[in-house]
Image (tube, rainbow, N blue to C red; front, side, top):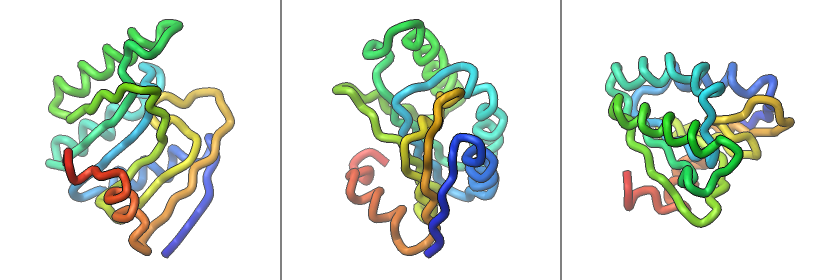
Length: 145
C-alpha cells in the first residue's frame, strides 16, 4: 500500500495522471461543481468516456447551492449527462470529497475535486491495500454502480 499527501497545488497533476491511466471506472464525489474547474477536467473526462471508462459523479443537488453556484452546477450536470456520464444528485447537505479509480486508488480529503479554485486543501491518495474497495463497500456504492 502506498499513501501520499497532496495539497491544492499538487493534487490535480497526480489526479489527472491517475485518470489518464484509468482502465475501467472512475467515481468522483464532489459536493460542488464549477464551470472554471470543469474546464480543466473536461478534456480528460471526454477521453475516458471515449475509451469506454465508466464515469460516475456524485454531487449536491444544485437547489442546495446559492450565490450563482446553482446555475453553474446545473449547467455542468446537464453537460456531463449529455455526453453519457452518470450523475447522482444527492440531497441533505452532501459534503463528501473523494474519488475511486478502478477500485484500486482512493483519494479522500477536503478538496472539492470538481470545483476547487482558491481554497487551501489537503487530499490523501491510497494505492493498493484494499482501501478503495473498503470505501466503495462502506458507502454501499454497489447498490448504484
